[in-house]
Length: 447
Image (cartoon, rainbow, N blue to C red; front, side, top):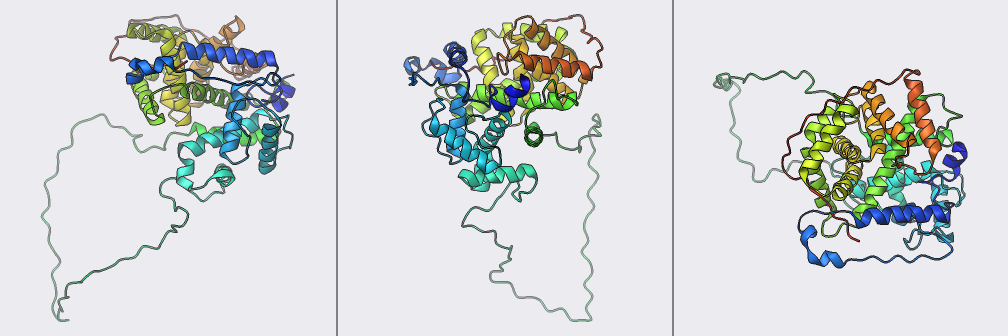
């Protein structure tokens, strides 16, 4: 069942075959979240924002979905002309999907848009809209090819300055304007070398030595997920319970699936924020991350049984409406993954768990297992995996690919295999009050 679902019609990728009942449930979940959301600063108090309403036109025979809108947006961005962005997957969108599949060398079938194909399309879209287009100066399908070549390691474009169309890079030249007359020195004349006064040594303040200050830069989760998706594409689809031979590879795939899903959900909420630009939202999320810095550091030191109560005490002391805090964390989780800011992502996931969304603990397990934004602590990672999976098994709502229990079984089996069947120790809670500092930024989502 999982193999068929993931390779032909997954919740994230196979947008064309979802039942109407499921699509309506997704829509209801989003609308409920949007109504109770929150936003920062002047947008929070601006009375003009209270009357903002959105209208959605739905053809009665084709349900609209969030994933449908995202797919249409990305396809249109790269020049595949999916038509109006209404979330309804009709003939025009299917034709655009087939043109995209043909470009990428995937099997061409507009009714079978597999998860890894959707993930690759959305990752390329996020890369392009957050700097890739500006760096390369490209548009449309040429930009998609540049992304593919970059991830395959065959692209020549690097970050930083890039030549723009019509402005080729010129070799460096030196121009001397009105050079002064040169003094002619007789051959017999020996010019003594210049002498310089030796400065007195500057005393160095005593400090703790850091022998790793010049270490390698932190690994990029975005690049890692691109490599994972390429491997998934080569394998013909995601690892399933039946095909799993490497539990670590299976968890890495599911980490990237969860990352893409979190970015998509956050992007949808971001579109509903009134009065803030993308740059301002990112700035506010930076402040959100900074204020959680101490708690983020503790993720690498203590387990969920100790850390969750501390973060919950911190959140309660802020005095912000819980719904606003949850929506803010979801938006900042998306921003963190989109910007490859792992501390922002870890802090946002931690806040979501503390605010009653235990399924997001899976993300913390992934981060600790692979060392993105945290110290590599697979032992603590297993505690977060276990806490999240146990909550899901006892009825907690899923955060990623909702309604698909087989994904839960896959992640559970992979963690058990990695842990070799041993029980996962859970420390005794030892919560202490956490002092509350400045107010966290908050987003209010318009209706």
